[in-house]
Length: 113
Image 1 (cartoon, rainbow, N blue to C red):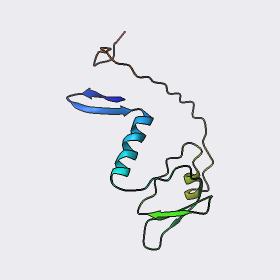
Image 2 (image 1 turned 135 degrees about the horizontal axis):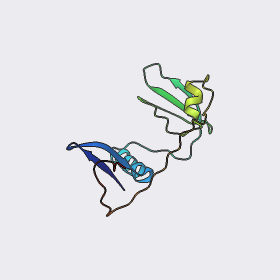
Image 3 (image 1 turned 90 degrees about the vertical axis):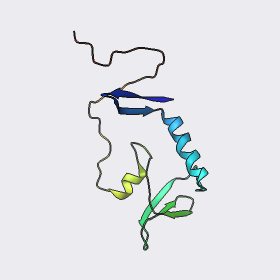
């Protein structure tokens, strides 16, 4: 599912795959009795008069809460609404790749050639 890298006796970084993380978060939200609505498409966001935010969806429904967290990716509708001047994603030349394995011993320090 994930793991961590120990450096100097403490946890330097922690990683977890996206699907298990989503499951952990949604399980906790449901455990606390907070409803999860899936399959909605964000239309607009407004600040609530009493604080917090109101999210309106394309199907005409809306919800309000103390916080709005937009986790909708590189073509984020949330970002389009809160920062209409944003030019959009741009390729930075950075490429990242990774993988998961188990049962492999690796040195704690990089190998110097």
